[in-house]
Structure formats: C-alpha cells, structure tokens
Image 1 (cartoon, rainbow, N blue to C red):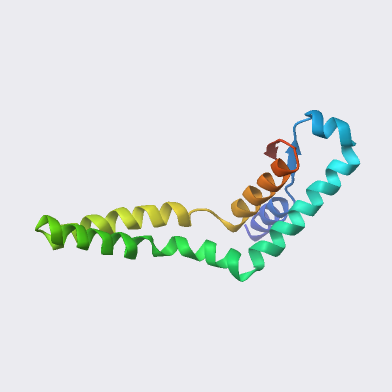
Image 2: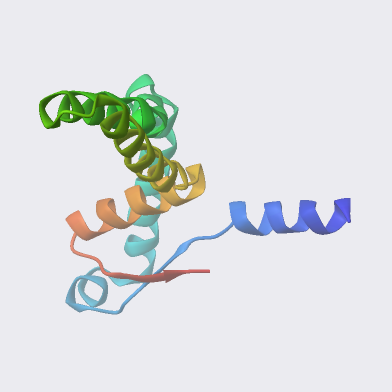
Length: 127
C-alpha cells in the first residue's frame, strides 16, 4: 500500500502541461516551448513558497468566520441575529471548504496554466 501511495506521489509531482500546437507553439518550436514551460513551473514553485502564495492558500480557511459575522450583522437588521449567525456561518463554511479544497498541486497547475497563457500558449491538460 505504501509503495502505491509513493508511486502516485512521484507520478503526480512529475506531471507537466500538454500544450496545444497553436500558432505560438508552432512559431517557437518544441524546445523553446519546453523552456517556457520550465520557466513557468519554476515561477509557480517560487511564488507558492512565498508568504504571499501561502497567504492566498490559507485565506480560504476564514470563510466560516467571515460568513458568520456577515450573517450576524444581517440577522441584527433582520430581527434574528441567531438565525443570521447560523445561516452566515453555514454559507461561509461551505465557501471556505470549497476554496480550501484546492490542493497545492492544483494551485501550481493553475499558476502554470496562466503563465503559459500569458506567453501565448494554450494548455489542453496535464499528464
């Protein structure tokens, strides 16, 4: 079982974007395109290790608290602070959970996809 998990981790770490052979790809060729991929991957790893990248990843955990606070304020004006607190907390928790479901690997892929799009490439998937 441990070997299977290790194999999955190794394979997932080795995944790379697959580029659509659009005009940009065709004009620069495979070698330059691969260098651009490498640059974007390196940028993603550097950015996501920075405090700003960590802050974005952690910020998703505050959804429940923010939702509860907003719900409480709304409940105060609506006449039922308790109900507003519960509803706001539930909505915030759901939003926070959905945002928190983005794994570091998904964040890296999204960063690389955007970086490559900014350079004119089109990512069609990851292998």
